[in-house]
Image (cartoon, rainbow, N blue to C red; front, top):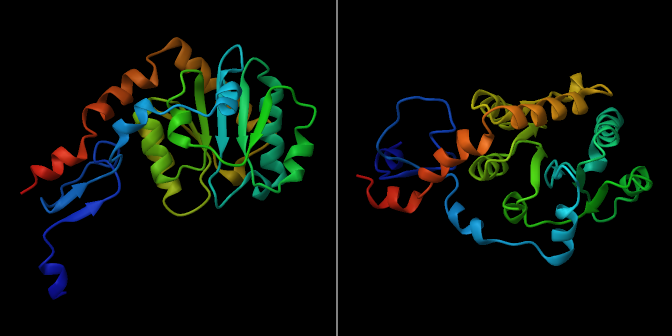
Length: 227
């Protein structure tokens, strides 16, 4: 307890404008999205750039994180994603899989609007001009990076803080959350199609959130001025 009393600063890996509003001590410094500005100049390797340039209506990135590769998802969830891809032929999907995942490669073998990758520079993908949506597990860093770049999100939480992050994404109007145990064949298509139509016909996510986040993301300046 004595050590805690003597702490001068506490660094918190989130952004107060994204999180739930509450009072907090001046000792707390929010450092979520620290260095986010650097990603604005990132570009993709040639092959990945070709993948994300595909799609008449743009590209969609699907990644549930390192801990939960596509192979680890239940068959019901995989089938729901598969159905969505089949019903959205004008979008090109890039799905992150494990390096040795032959099952997912077999599942999408005859699907023309899919490419599979085992590693990606995520912030460079989020900065790609043809990216229209990110289907994610809702990890804290992924959510903040996506909010910064103004990309709509479909969040399917897997564990811990991801459920809270998904709720915050919905609360900010930056995307939709689906729950694994409620997923049926049409779930991902319904949510992705709804989100796509909303972004086409209403205020875009980058106008609602990205501008705000870009204006508040210089964490080093905030650190310098902290008491």
